[in-house]
Length: 149
Image: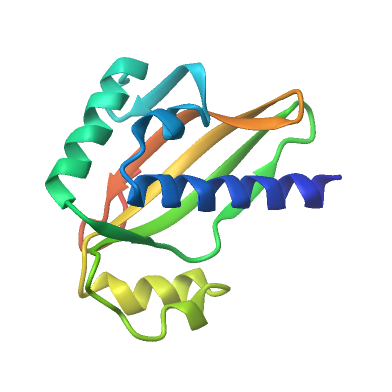
């Protein structure tokens, strides 16, 4: 059912966040199609691996924090889109009350936006068999007034 697919995609995002915290590039890439593209820059699979590895080296040990991702399933084919607002913080840093705001992305953004580096990832996903995979990822940093389009 569509509700199940939405939950599966959210679980995949949760898995990807854990893999990122573990610096596991190869398993993150297993969640993508062979022809995955990252924007901006139209980066291919090999370039994406390098970018992820560089980010891991830049941040060191970190946590990925995010509110409930939006998921929109296509009514015409086996595709979906998801928007995730996320915060990458050093492993030992805490921001109180974020868990309480999981169901309220706008309030979550207000809480963290003034105090940390915030990102938005827009995913395009495709369902192959019973598995959802990322076909395109568009990453943007928060610019102070919002995310650029």
